[in-house]
Amino acid sequence: MAEDRKPYHHGDLRAALLRAGEEVLAESGVEAFSLRRVAKRVGVSHSAPAHHFGDAAGLLSALAAEGFRRFLVSMRARQADAGGAPIDLLVASGLGYIDFARSRPALFRLMFASERPKEETPELAEAGEAAFRHLVEDVARLRGRSPFSDPASMADVVAAWSMAHGLAELSISGRLKPLQSMAEEEREAFLRGMMARALG
Amino acid sequence: MAEDRKPYHHGDLRAALLRAGEEVLAESGVEAFSLRRVAKRVGVSHSAPAHHFGDAAGLLSALAAEGFRRFLVSMRARQADAGGAPIDLLVASGLGYIDFARSRPALFRLMFASERPKEETPELAEAGEAAFRHLVEDVARLRGRSPFSDPASMADVVAAWSMAHGLAELSISGRLKPLQSMAEEEREAFLRGMMARALG
DNA sequence: CACCCAATCTGGACAATGACAAGACTCACC
DNA sequence: GGTGAGTCTTGTCATTGTCCAGATTGGGTG
Image (cartoon, rainbow over all chains, first blue to last red; front, side, top):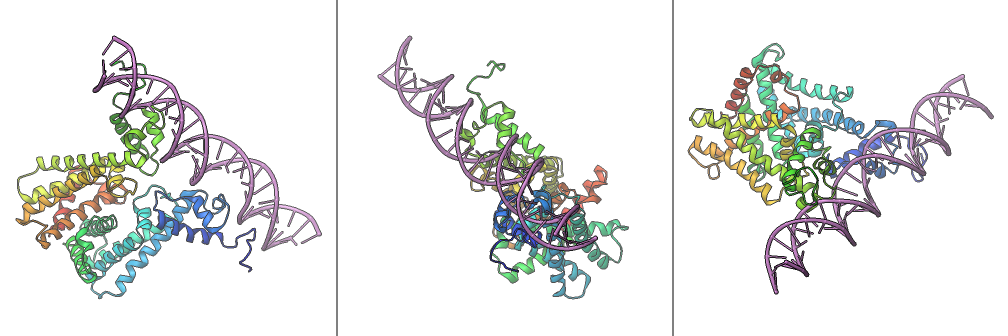
């Protein structure tokens, strides 16, 4: 219980590493991420993380998986504030998608544009698929057909996903200057319009 | 002229480093890119690149700039095969955008999703802006108004760009499985449909 | 033509990093 | 109280980026 001195066993090192790992990721970006820096921040030896995550890719995989779970939360949060119409729910998911990218750009890049995490990790694969299923369900509700059996609906999935993803990625790389200069409300309306375009 | 023995001065080291740099980038990705490996491939000392590019970010900036120039070529190539209608020309740019990403995924990521290149490098900034101007001109031709003075047209720019970028990024990360299983012609038609959606 | 200077390139050094191996420590369980 | 599995440390090695001093070269200048 004594938090002052450092006991040999940390007690909850895995969770502490995840927390510090996300901080380092946010501060330095994926490309400058350092496992030793994470260990130092937690106050533990440089090779302690290996026992919980194997290697750097292991920790990054766990961070990406956790990211996908919060990604899903971000989309659902927007839906909670939206109307009940299927189209509004789908557009809301898109806004939540963009919210997430803008609030955690480095994590978003880790999840979608990095080769460092091990995609085949069960935890990561499952979390990513859950996010994809959410999108598919949004479209299924809108079209009344499962995208898995209806190509036209799957086209809607691709369209909505690509538009949201493009907006998110270009936004966090600072390339959408028109968007930056907009007030909050204006940007919201603009993004809704973009998502509406994608859905024909 | 003798290519056999290694003279002390390489002769065209800068160009050779760019060529080898792109190879290493394509083979290893941005995150595993190594300056020393590039030097070794050219057969030159590990610190030789410094005199031409300063540091690793300098070489990557030059590669990104060259990438943006070829990116533009890829879009124009598609337009050369397209009809003369403004909408067809804009859609063709989108296809060229995606062509480029699919044929050089690591370079595309370097250009759009990496923090390693120095964005403020004049050569890189200019090359990136030229690509952006191309898109703006496509939309200006379509709408008969300059996006810089007409917000509705700028919305078309953002829409077309985001859709193409989302499709490109998701495609190279292997997340668009429906697209992977399509035959060449089918995929073409599908992508045209996606770009058409973005333009309302 | 000889010389000199600036540009080019080499080799060594250093700190940071990821990975690995061997050992110290702690706790739960018997 | 002892034992073994799990946890963490320390030390080591190869790789990397960057810096620095020095060797080499070629072009321009006297």
